[in-house]
Image (cartoon, rainbow, N blue to C red; front, side, top):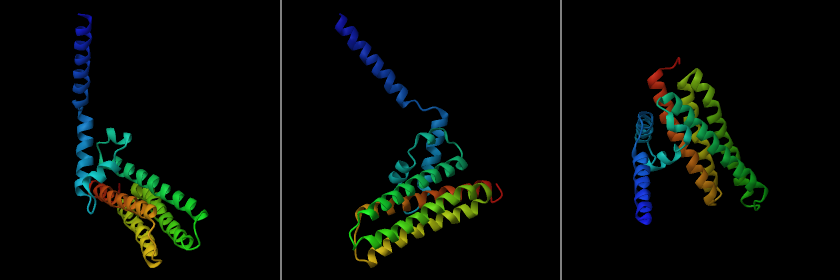
Length: 187
């Protein structure tokens, strides 16, 4: 009898755990709707990639595009900062043929990082300028890719980081534009 009681208790607890996992309070449902809406409206990005990029504990209680715009910029800053650190580390160990390209890409992606950084206070002061800052961050990615192409080199780890920065450019373009549409320029 004791064994069957344990099995029953196990299934009871398992059922409760599954029930709790499936239960979604209103705040989570709103957040999911907002993130889903942003990801549906983000052009040139796979929906699943957008959801993965915005998968962050801070997003759990976000119900307003303003907060999601700031979160997306924070994530873009962190991502582009990682790309810049990676390139900096690669430059010190680079072969003579890759060194110049890595230095250019470092400068290019550092520019993207700076554009994201500047967009944060601009979003508070003038969302239209913040949206432009984000759009211009794509230049760093494009210049880095062009530099690699002109040097006739393929550096998969650099291309992967360019793709991530580009993903955040697209997402932040959507969130800052939605912020602008919702609140106007003088927020």
